[in-house]
Amino acid sequence: PEQINLLRAIAQLVATAIHSAKLDASQRETQRLEQQVKMAADVQKRMLPRELPQIPPFQIAARYAPTFELSGDFYDVLDLGGHVGVAVADVAGKGVASSMLMASLGSSLRAYASNVYDIDQIVSRINAQLTRDTLASEFATLFFGVVDPKTRRFTYCNAGHEPPLLLRDGR
Image 1 (tube, rainbow, N blue to C red):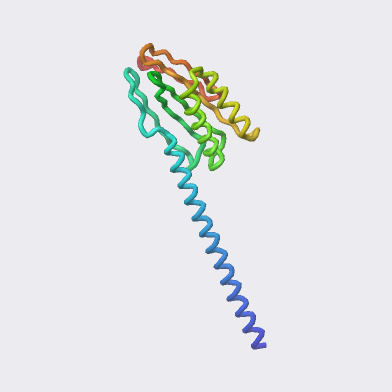
Image 2: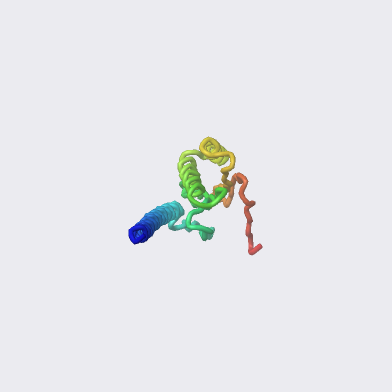
């Protein structure tokens, strides 16, 4: 009986040590994943403009406040050689998948807008790329417009995003 009790005590200690080791490994894995999410969030924030161009007579401002560390929210203001491109996009969902899709959308927009003049063509190319690379349940909305500061003409394409709001003379 003493040996059985001793064996039970040793088994309980070993079981406790194994459980503790599993918890430690799980905690290290959680910390590693949290670090990767922070790094991804940092990359995502760097994809947003650091400074917004000030182009008289316009006042350009933006505020970015994601719900989670990683999200599918995106905006950009592009210098298009005398014209200014303005983009606002939202990828469905939150987290890693939507932030990756947002990064793809943002990169595509910058690449196409720097080489293609026609706004419809830019948005059409982005749409073709996204539909090729995503699942049916994944989607993004995009508002992209180009303003000519000299004529104040604003041409845009709204691909499922909230309608724009025009403020003129405080109204």
